[in-house]
Image (cartoon, rainbow, N blue to C red; front, side, top):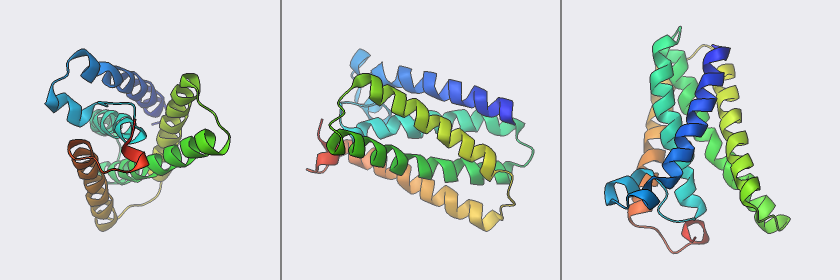
Length: 160
């Protein structure tokens, strides 16, 4: 499974990179639900969610236990955004770091940590109830991303 996590990391980063430029290339409203439409940190959280979810959907076909895999995948999916937000806001407003290279590196690091967590979490026994709760929470997070993109609030998180 380790090899799949490496492949998953690489695929997620490549897919996320492509997704970053999708809306600028083709400004279709449907694409705007899944790709960043501006440079706000909220919009960039989509680059964690959608590529990771798609890649996990593909990787799940090779998982020994689909239940454990999806529990671990959804757990990772829920852990990555707070890590990214906490690190980014600390660097930006705590230390004054404003660098595109830092932002890209942080994205790659958080995706790597997400796959490391996925590999670790799927080794533990998951009940169907635990997996169901994680899937529901991950679905709510996806819904929040869609709603926050369609009707952003007037908060710093949503500002470019």
